[in-house]
Image 1: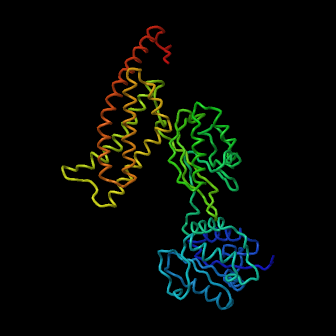
Image 2: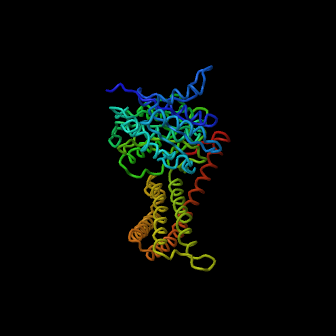
Image 3: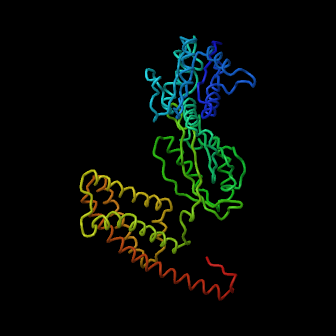
Length: 458
């Protein structure tokens, strides 16, 4: 490997860009030990600063110019550029400016790089480390540096120049970062060795203060108190697997109760960001845990819970699908409000499909239909079975019309769905009232038998 070195002088406005210059120096020198980045903030007390700058410029092979937003006085830029070109005729001048700013008159004849991660990556960082045009060396500074690392460097340089690198982030709530580099997470158990990082610890979600652990340790910790809910861990695994298989990840719905001093609080994890490496392989998954006011699904046990589930699902279908897309869309103060153009109708159909699918996913997640069958007595079960069969027929007809983009047929089937929803809700409401009355009698009997404060109701 070559031992040739390169010196780069950063020309910048000290009053507003010294922080950015320091950060850029740190980033650039971090990728190779053969690059010396010079900034005037390194001048030692007592040195003649003009002489110091002139000497360092004369020794540089590259000058990086940071054009500031404030353009009231740019004579220092031209002065340093002129000196560099005079003493380093074969040197390379690299000028960075903010995208929205005009090009200074003195630089109009030069190729300028806009301050954006994409421009910095393609026109500055890749040529600097992998090429020879900027450095004029016999061998590149670091030809093995990965695209993933350079993309991150470009983003950090952009943030530094925009003044964002000096911001102090303050995180609220819990978050987890799952690193899967080199693992096949699409296989069973493939996630076990993944590294999990918890920037704030896991005090709220797991009553655990560790900040780094393996996925199998994380899953074991969650399983120690199954009463708080554990499906959320499985759902995180499913989402990671879906992204790894290049599928669109599901919207996470599972909730669980916190532990320790927040044992009464309820949380829901959500995938917020995925980092991909240069070959488009996902290697880092960012999850955030948001507090919610109610758990995923609250219901009673046994028949009363089964009927409640069906009422809940029927209510969602009525007020999330049938009323918005059929009743409200059909009339608007007496005037037609239905979509007219093919594009409008296609968008309408897609929104109906999405809304129905969201409800169906929750029903499947909790096996609502099968559980509800056992909530009715033998004399009523035939009626319920018929209702469920009719529901399936209407659902299939709506899906078929949507798949064929048959707008007229879809509206017809939604109308059948509205009539059926009213019929089913009446049957369910009667059965729910019956179960609630039986439950009240049971509670009264227990209270009379055991007295206040000692009630035990199954």
